[in-house]
Image (cartoon, rainbow, N blue to C red; front, side, top):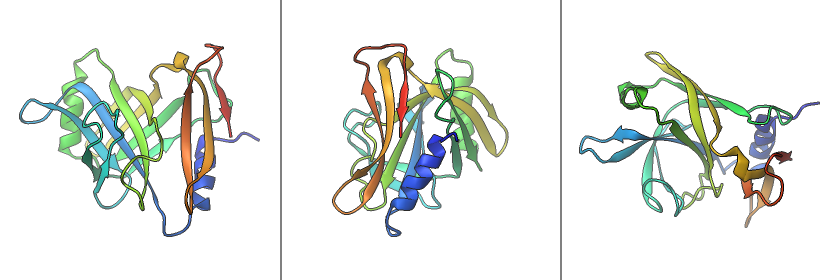
Length: 196
């Protein structure tokens, strides 16, 4: 039987108390994403029906350690099976996208630079820091968009520096938190171990 990361996440979600919700967020970053004043900008979304204000980790690429807003948007992450190719791909689908997100994608369309995607889960009871440090950082490829939906493939940015991905339930004060821990390679650059 093949276990997928999605199944492991579902199990972790089910083990949380009913009053604690895991809030999945995505941040899209590209050198050409600029706000009206010409400053570097990011697209930040939360899988929820209301916007979310939460703090980023201290070494975030933009707005490090600051409170930022994630816009409520339906999205789906389809994780690959555990026994997959050397560089696993995640399928990302963003639904009901508006002009603002399409505008940013248009900014990046003519560039050779890749769009960076950062996945951060937060707990509804603790928005002071993401529950995954470091967050999962991927690059988008094969981006397809229409009026209401964006679909893309996402891959690890630097697969050679990751020795294994370890998904586990991490006990904190009174509840379990799902964490995806990435550890730097120590010996073997060619292997990726996924341990559940």
